[in-house]
Image 1 (cartoon, rainbow, N blue to C red):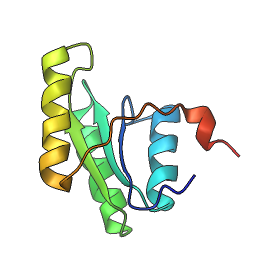
Image 2 (cartoon, rainbow, N blue to C red):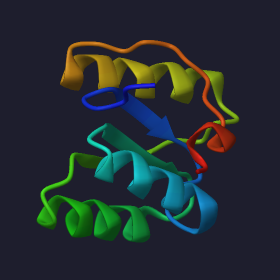
Image 3 (cartoon, rainbow, N blue to C red):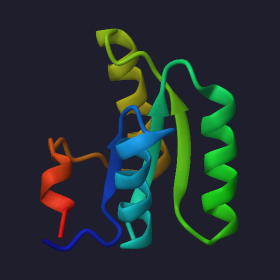
Image 4 (cartoon, rainbow, N blue to C red):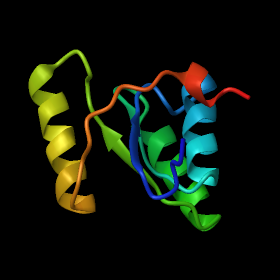
Length: 96
């Protein structure tokens, strides 16, 4: 599966496996939106760190238990990237 220049939203991604998945996607050439609800400072730091490495990484704060916030975050992504394709991918698809 080619993922270069695809847009991804990775939830719970300021630490642990979510962070690792987001980083892997970035390094493979995807545009990645990192998300968390309670880790704004970590998210902003993560965005700066990855962008400094030339990666296409963005932090967005969103409570994924709120349908309204989720809709809003997809609108933000669509407006910033000009596209959003709804796909659900699991981390297992990226494990080698």
